[in-house]
Image (cartoon, rainbow, N blue to C red; front, side):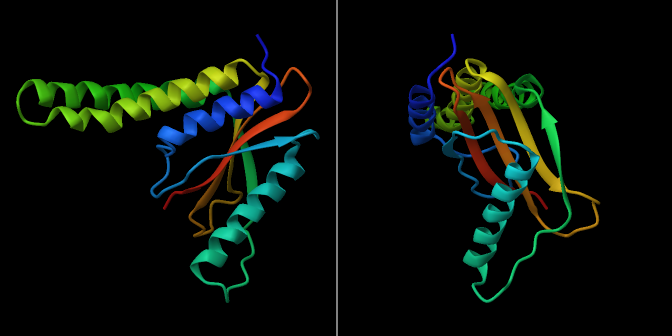
Length: 173
């Protein structure tokens, strides 16, 4: 089943209400959902990434004129991205459950690892129902920059021809 753009965006936003933290980031990196009627090519991805980076830098210091470093895009499949993240989250659930069972932790300590596991599986499930789904990371192009940002774009095409984008700026030092 391929979802319409409206339904896909609605489902993604519902997922993000309960839990919205990407596990590969060192700080709060909430995903935001966007729709586009035009294809998301490399130029568009780099433009969106630059906008997120400039916005983040303006929030830190409005006086700084930020210029993004040389960047490149790394493409991954949904499985390459989500399976290891979900496996790690589930290991955390298992470890926490063992601590709860052994009396070393309270039951409510299971809430966050379970929410993270659910978040990853639900995101994966929605994007799996879209065509041409992929994950794009915008990284330092020559690996010499001290820029801590990595752009994250999870994309797929809806049945009505729109591109659905979940994007965030990860902090990775």
